Image 1 (tube, rainbow, N blue to C red):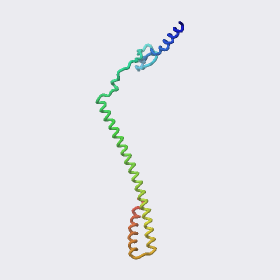
Image 2 (cartoon, rainbow, N blue to C red):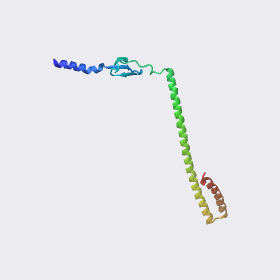
Image 3 (tube, rainbow, N blue to C red):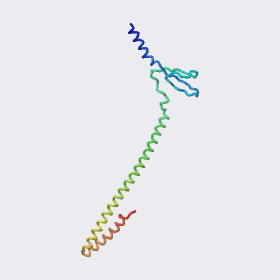
Image 4 (cartoon, one colour):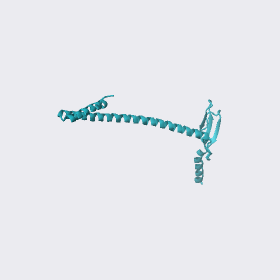
Length: 155
């Protein structure tokens, strides 16, 4: 018998917190606060709002209307376009700097090759050869000296 009484009292005590609710309190500055305990100052307005466990309808404020959807789509497209422009600009700048590095590397390689060819031509001229070949080597030397001025000069 006592066991049943303690069991019922235990159930009542355990279920007691589930009957709590939310208190709406307004302080002296007019600020509204929601609390789980009663307001300290009883002179102010106090409203007990019990917890509601029913499923409520979706708030219409959160549902954008057709105009709001169109505006948000337009804003999203504008943001995407701005991001695309920024990425395109960064990509162009990166490609431009990569092209400049490649251009300098090609220029250095051409300078090196031109120097080697000039040394080769000069060694052939010093070794001696027929007049026809010597004239052709002199023309080549003049050509490669122009090339050396173009590729080996610092800009």
